[in-house]
Length: 121
Image 1 (cartoon, helix red, strand yellow):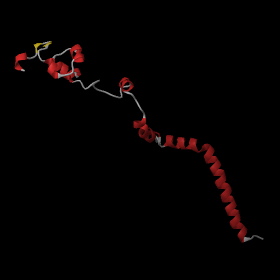
Image 2 (cartoon, one colour; image 1 turned 45 degrees about the vertical axis):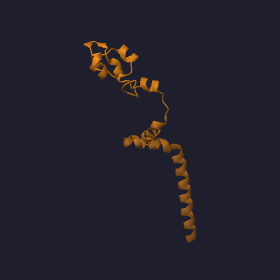
Image 3 (spheres, helix red, strand yellow; image 1 turned 120 degrees about the horizontal axis):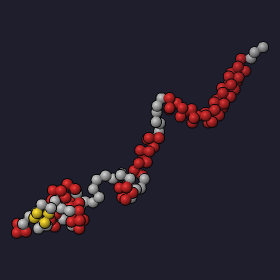
Image 4 (cartoon, one colour; image 1 turned 180 degrees about the vertical axis):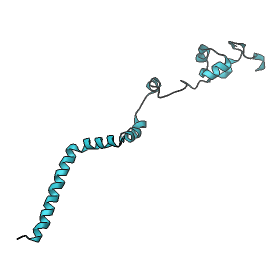
């Protein structure tokens, strides 16, 4: 003789046992299964998003940023140290390091001769 109200209790018990077992399996093997699944579908997952969100929070000083090529370009705002202006004004590296103003070029003997006449200024 089968009682109908027991069937409902049996279904609930079986469901509870299956959920408990599946939770244990997922806790142990879930991370590995997720990695395998990501590999199968060629997904990078969340790692790239996490790295991008942390990108501007890392403190880097100027010297190490320049050495690691994070910062590209000129080392200073001195216009005379800019290679394009050095070539245009025909000045040497030594002159550019010692001087910081374009007005210092007045009367300077450049590689091509006198750049300008002192009387013009």
